[in-house]
Length: 123
Image 1 (tube, rainbow, N blue to C red):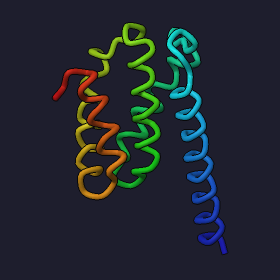
Image 2 (image 1 turned 90 degrees about the horizontal axis):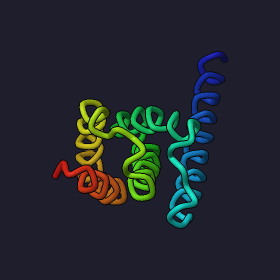
Image 3 (image 1 turned 45 degrees about the vertical axis):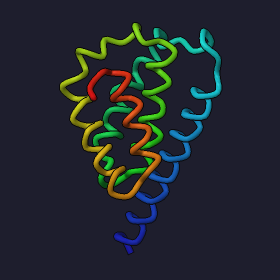
């Protein structure tokens, strides 16, 4: 009854979240320099959402992968628009954990987190 419906809804929400992250990732990774503006308040509002998704890499590695790729695009196209140092206390541990998850079983997540950590000069 209710548990089955709840599980269905939770799976549906997670599926929609993955698809949304995937679309955002593809859109951000396929634009040329200058066509993405992280200064835009809507883009800036996505940063905490991406960090939150990366934090849950152990239970949602695919979501963490797409979120990490979005963060990578933000760093690539507008590196000075976000105060990454201010976010480091939250972002670095999340990325390190996601990297460990990637090493254990999600090679794409491992590579994506390595790129972002390198961009942030963490490793």
